[in-house]
Length: 330
Ligand SMILES: [Zn+2]
Image 1: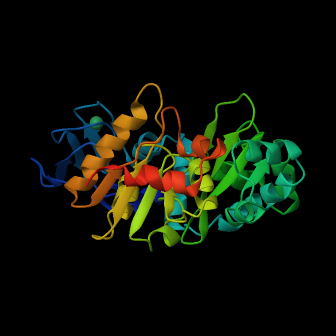
Image 2: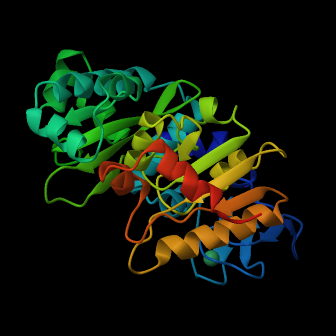
């Protein structure tokens, strides 16, 4: 409870919202502001903030509360995780050592579990130098907590980090792990199930910016894909200018990154799934980029393929280049 009051004093709701690119105009009262709701698709401003009371209320989706409630809703975190998330905003370097230790542990496990290496090969990932460069690892499950305990990490730290479930189990079990870095620091871990479990999982914390943006942003032409396996096969084929948003919906921070240079061209290669959500998302993103004055093109792969399956099925860099040259848009 002390934590809670401390956090509320340190971070005002309005400051937090402004840092997350919320724009507002003064509303009726002196301390009242209104803007588009960050929690639902809002077309006319319905999100009200009382800066003095540090409370928000949205007349569109009916959500309301304090800063912690806002973090719960916007980051999809539990109450406890939201507290930890806000603490990390005050002292962000806090658990980078823990995340590095975890990633290193998972990297070591990869070579001890042939089923994981077989899985990478099935997905077309064979270059050991690239696997090393991306820091890919494997989480067998039921072993991380013990390992980190021997490194001196207490259970509270592990629960706050999201690496261990409140029930005490490892968050990742039988998953190939990709560390997501931002300015050199690991901000999250992505785990792809190699078994029957739900395929995609990130730790309950911010997913961070675009993948490997520190290096990709230097290119004048950038390829944007949906998943990390798409990115990995493209890097393997020599397209080091590929980045990934971990999904088809970019956070405001990721969109801002994509737009941070006026001369950049973006090629969007999302999955062509049967429910067409990938195509729809890529069309919308192309329009948003055009709206921001950026060059963007949709790239279509042969029917039924995403970049990963295309390369795993034997496509070459020249085949992919041909697809890019037939891209649509301007
Ligand atoms: Zn709303």
